[in-house]
Length: 58
Image (cartoon, rainbow, N blue to C red; front, top):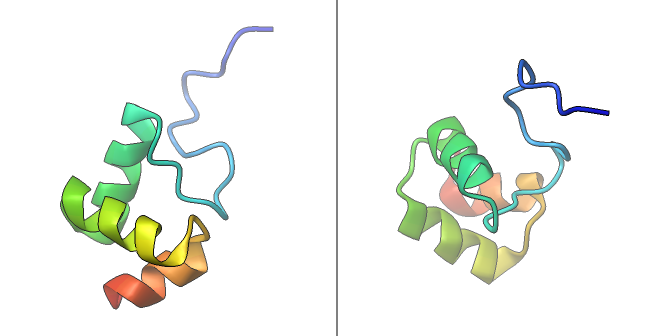
């Protein structure tokens, strides 16, 4: 089955995936931060969106 190219969000919206370039771009836009800030937050608190959001103060 082909990917749905109309779905532009991450596959797992509860986790921040910084391994895929398009997800990295999605989450930097979502949080309004740079790639470096996002990667540092994920490294500090893990991939859960709730925790990353708290770390970034968003």
